Image 1: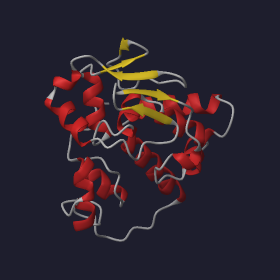
Image 2 (image 1 turned 45 degrees about the horizontal axis):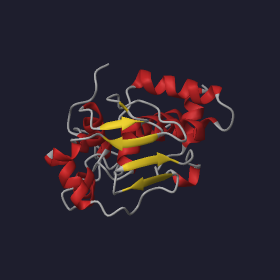
Image 3 (image 1 turned 120 degrees about the vertical axis):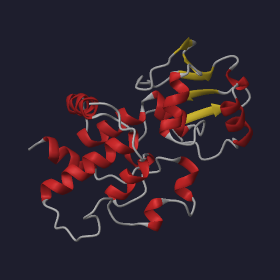
Length: 208
């Protein structure tokens, strides 16, 4: 299955809430969810009774779309979460938060996760001194993420750095804006992961 390349605002409308897939646009009056708060398509405005399975499916799809994960990859993450000690739903969220593209987004070095993926693919970041251009790379506690030398010459990176105020960075991460070096202090707890998801519904979906 290829990565979705259509209008991402349709994804937010399909889930009936903002998934913040387009950065600042989601906070503006241009946001499609605010202007058309019904599902896209010919029958989007019709009332539909959602089954228990439908609720579980929608929650799974919503989480996939927030992080930009393909179906097969998401299923692998779930299997990995299930095999770890602890609560499966929270394990799944921790794995998704540990992706390098998400770390870049959480550090406010990108306006959206899709922009963060693009920056990682372009080789703008190093992990523990080695260049990593794989967005799905899972960062571990203690790992150091740094902007590579010369990355600040990019107009995109330069504009982000100029706008960066060092605020709203999660407690489980730390960032030195002098060297643009970050460190993963710990895995995030559930209350530190601000995604509008009922992960238990996803566990129920895969437990059918």
